[in-house]
Image (cartoon, rainbow, N blue to C red; front, side, top):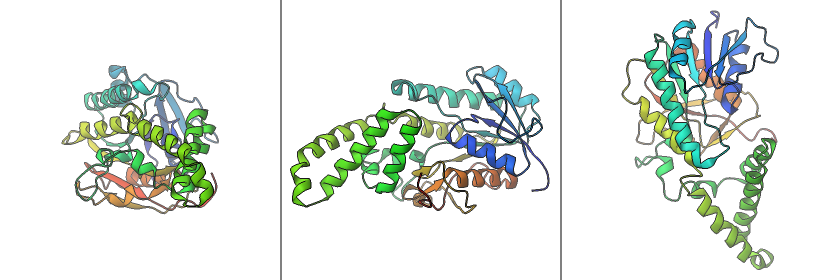
Amino acid sequence: MSNSLRVAVLGPKGQCGQCVVDELLSRGHHVVGISRSPPKVWPKATPEQFSSIACDFSDIKSLSSILSDGGFNAVISAFGPPLTDMKDVYRLGVEGHGNIKMAVIRSTYRGPFIIIGGAGSLYYKNGVQLCDDKDFAFQHWYPWPDAHLDYMSARMIDRNQRGLGIFIKLFKWARNNREQPNWFPWLLRPFANVIMHSAKKTLTDPVMIGLIYCSRAALNMWEGVRDIKWSFLSPPWQLRDKGIRTGKYEVYVDNYAGSAEPAIHNGIYNEDLAVAIVDEVENNQLHYKHWTCTGPIGLKAW
């Protein structure tokens, strides 16, 4: 794109936010990162390319003022609540998304606004959302390929969430043990069953999957709003970071009757998700839409 845009990214340091910032910068756009403690500089970016503003999203008045006075051509919300206390994730997520919505609406900004949510909001063809499916999320972890479970475990350990990384390793072992009919795995079957029972209890606990539910609540907040040209992106179920930017992706607009169901069964690298997001920033094709996208994964070890 020949014209440089000034784009605000709320939450520039998160899993999705970092890739979005990188993609915007690679296309010559100026990025303003906004969060409680945003980075002051960005790798390989000059002050003319990247700047930041510190703002606590609970301060609706300050965020509204920043959006009003920032001269932005587009705003992207990559907000996610902290995961340090799982019991508080849903509350903090809903309040955070709600505060951002109020700040945007109360501001004078009226350009495109893209919200990055979660896969749990996607609909099956039977009209049921993924996060409302039976035994979610246990039944949706169970068929994951070993490669994705290995990725999830390595990612958690890399992010200093070693306990969760070990939990995923045990889940993979127990799942595979139950699926193997040979005599040796059978000897260890009681241990595998105990692990699976505990995993099911954990993965169907609303507290433990509060992040997914708060992302759905964020989508509900924007349904019917027409004062702002919003669009809501739900990543596919198998979202992977530290991948490869292929530039290939396919967009699905969710019509609440399964048009986006392929994203429930597939994935994308964060790098290609960012390509889709920045393409939407530049082309403005999906106002007032709930959408997703899929792309190639498994092209490299994590």
